[in-house]
Length: 267
Image (tube, rainbow, N blue to C red; front, side, top):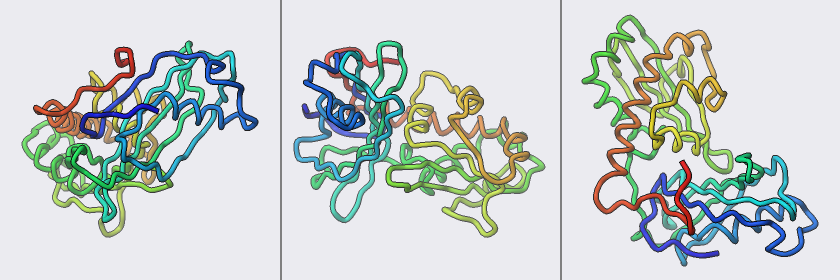
């Protein structure tokens, strides 16, 4: 496994060269272990000092010797803790036809945080992120008009590794966000839910394709389904503002571009 030498931030990506699985030796007795080992060999460590503390893995269709695959990874979470910096990274094995064969989430611990960049703009579905949205949306007349008669709470949830989740509630009254909290009394009218990698992909995609992703089932919802469907337009506006905040942060001087391992990053 090679090592990244630049700063680490949410949205950083790597893409390996395509390789035939059999190049790395015989398949292991447990099919999914072959994919895990292959992903580890083709994906660079976050830093030389990083320690992997967790791994969730799912082999939709386990790779075998004749398969030609490449490995894609993206950092989905950066969080400060008492022990250092915790990083979640989504990794997937993709075959020559573009199908995801296996995927998982790695959790890494970095004792030193000098190579890590953090900002609320990419800490999705947290109160700090919600405050950024509140400030931005307060100046958007389209958002205000789309919810001019609505009184309720929108929940936004980002599921992370080990069953954890980040969630923020936006309390809205007549076109204004009047409160931002992890939970509001009575709970959310409905909650929009997606895995961390989906939030990252949506935030940094070239275009706002939230509606397409929602139709394809990449997002789910809990609570009042009727209100969720009725508020499609304001949700799309919220996502647009979140994308602007994330992409502006990513473009600041000193932040690294998506990293590759011997090839251009795939779109």
